[in-house]
Figure 1: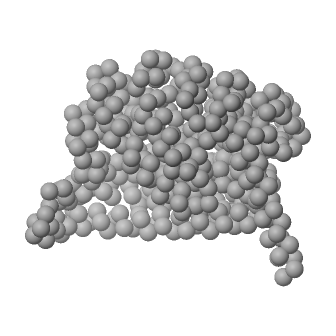
Figure 2: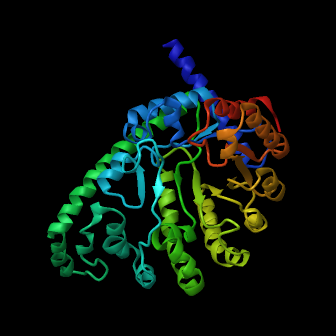
Length: 421
């Protein structure tokens, strides 16, 4: 009993120390040392010498590996892979169509393959804008997951009134609806088990002293439509032919994205919201298009998250060098983490350091192909040049690459204990 009490007290003290280190960095204060983040998807399979598929489908094994990795590397914050890696059974029962995953479209030892397709036709913008929920039920969900096929036979809910509500329920008796409901319930039950695992594992790691790096994800309104509705080709054409419709649709979706993020964050002991960004890079659109189309709605989303008491953590993928001045203008100080993939985090700190905490960005090529001493040297450069005034968190460009050698990963995590900004 005494040993257990001492362990609990040690875990609580470690958790408070790491939480303070992270918060000081977000607040643009100088922490006791530069914090480091642990994020991995299929690298955990390499770490334990199992297949990518087993990692996705065996939650107990996945958590055992994750627990071992966190204890070995002693990060200051960690990203839970439960809702983006351990989701094989749920995706299979849902008949999810937007990804190929290990053993389902790609080999057992291969990572995800995203399928860029058109899931909303250009002439359907108005239908989405008028009734997003109705569009989801009748058209979008059946297109992205086979379990929802049949939902197009559900009644049109807006307009039902009085006894029309009574007579309108007959739509639920449609054979296709009943079949879809049964499949969706089965997928929901599978995902509920996964979420219960997540809650339990978070509590376990908190007791051991390790804070979360993010509670859930959100998405930039432009990316929401470009990635998951219109597809790359469709959205690039819309940018020139239907700019007004894009702007109207992005404005429509913002309140829903904010509600989703706030609802999940309320369930977990972390207020950081991870926002992966896909269409903002310098090469994907002009500076004028970014400034006048992409940024206004995304800025509104970020400010909405902040107003809800949350901490946005956008991952600026690829090169976003030209965007640095814009994304720092008129933003509240010490309220976000900007994570950079290819934009040099030291340069980003020079431009944004008095506005926002920056995170990154050890390159995948260095982590995969470099030597431990080279990884150590790059970590030292970032820590000493970018972290001298605080406001820096060390991370990979996108966490730990799937093929990174263990000795390089160890060098990465050990660096924060060797060098001080």
